Length: 152
Image 1 (tube, helix red, strand yellow):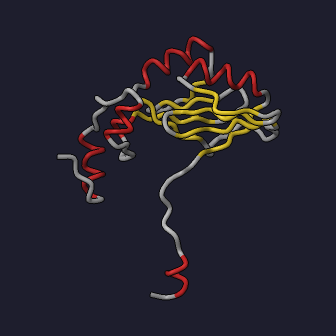
Image 2: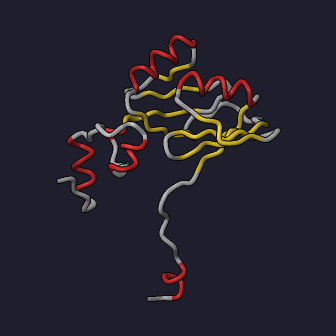
């Protein structure tokens, strides 16, 4: 094995993502209307909210224009109630086959359902989150099987 190959590490996951917003209180209110979130911590310029078993950092100081392709991808148990909530709030829902929306600061958020993707949680984590009955679609199971992951 070469020194360069030996020096590489294997990525395991993402600890958190930070998105810039214009106002922390408004951002906490906006995301709190859409998701079950818990405030993990806060400073004058940042707020940290739990989302599932990870967290998102909201940071003040958004200065760039709205995002077109760059986005934050979130996983939910069911997109339908989220779409209804976004519609009721008058949020910008982007056209397409999935559910992409813009938050009030132009951050693009893409939402997928747990059942449709290869991303998985252990049964213990799902139970702890109150989601023990979530299943995977046949397409997601096939993606996982292609990587050697099987659910028997």
